[in-house]
Image (cartoon, rainbow, N blue to C red):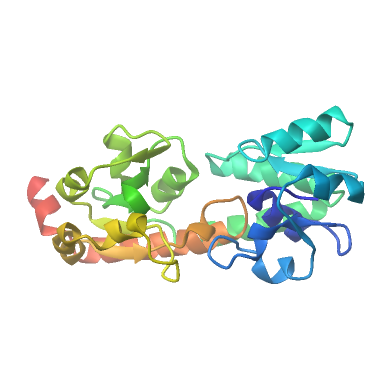
Length: 260
């Protein structure tokens, strides 16, 4: 069983048919999940011990930041649990995929997934020469991603310079609107979903102050589900980033060019 969305995505991709007793209800959410289709054929849970114990699973795959009360209880009563961390590098992604595939008894499936991912990530490498276009990831409520994150790793690999790394924002941090506008990135990455319901957090992405920024920057939308968890969907996120980097190089931001 899986009781974490990122665990759902690996378990559903790496387990044999019939091996998975249940995944979280989040796996069926089209906005956040990259495995909605396969999740539709598996029972779902909400991470409650009452749902897990009666099924007597051989293994529960959890996340280090979720369902901690349930995980503690399961360990006390002797149900095996493995906790997945949050990868910050591609090497950590590879290690996590291999670990899950091995404990599921499907090491070959893990290697096949990684081979396909590495091939996709290596296609169309980042352009060389000249300064890298600057990029800023903007999430609802002004959150962005800095050093020590998988997103930062992917930006660098795509040939983009993450402005949040220079803005002293480590991991996941929040930037005021004024700093976002003043940063003048060459690439503005809207890390949100077009089909997400309206909210005050989402409204910041449409603030009038960002209008001029969107006129000078290459704007790309990367759905959250593409780079939240370890898995082959990272290749799709990378393709969007590389395309945005190429577009930014072909039409330099006049304000950042003047600063250079």
